[in-house]
Image 1 (cartoon, rainbow, N blue to C red):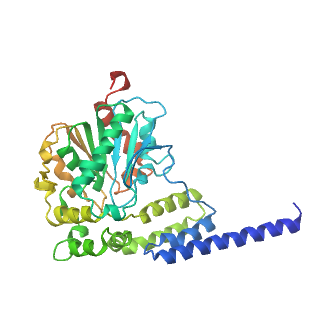
Image 2 (image 1 turned 180 degrees about the vertical axis):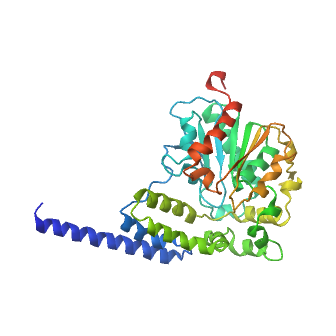
Image 3 (image 1 turned 45 degrees about the vertical axis):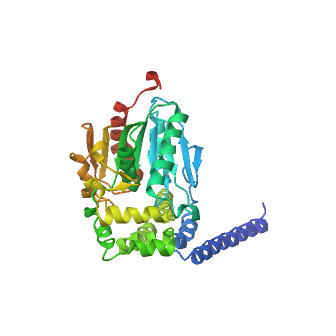
Length: 379
């Protein structure tokens, strides 16, 4: 290519990149996001010369849908265990933090250990989900996901693996619908909501009228949820971008940082009626750990959980502090086969930290492996 042509190509590339940045910033302004990510992402991508990695890079297929919910299957390259794993994530953010980046994906790790892995993507709640109740969510959506996991994997039971609020829902589900649940793993899971720190304070009845919020909005908008997380740590939410400036010449660091921020900014609408009951019964009245919470017409008695239970705690968790999860160490659940594992990481670090593939996941895998049926044992 001659010099004029090269110069023209460079000019065109520069103009094109400026247009892309301008479009991204214009979209962020239009969305009125309070998160710095959509405003700063195009600038840092251009400065570091990196591109956004794909969402949930581990190969998967959709095997079942119900409303906005999708059940995703991540098949093992070489399956060793008959008992599949079904991940239940929170209703606030998206499931793909469990399949973060190649080499830092809990789902990828478990498929390589030989597990047939499934994950629920709750999707984007719309008008049809405004009146969805917790009873319908557990007895309808989650129950159908369990049954389809059993059907597709050709297994009579599953390991239910709940994360954050997904762990709270998994506990309630296992208490109400124990059939087909071989093992229960709950990770960074709120149980005693009197120890939720600033979130417990903010959601007290005298501070927070959940009925007015749900009645006004229907589904709780993402920016309402996002504002709470932002105000819980406003300084850190800004200063961490200064560290990114210092690491701008490290493409791997920039890619990982932006991937984490993308996930953190990807909040979704929270189904209104589920939110109303969750705030009222859990944060305001703390009924779950007292075995007084009701789902539909049934009381959630955690003492009726008799399958093996693993409680995974992040010691540096400021979203679900350890004290929220620790009651499961006692006699709150009925099973004698219960174990607690604690790790010196934060809430998200359990699934996305650079330490997890060597320090966290192998121990969880070993616990599940001892309690899962192998392929040789049959369905």
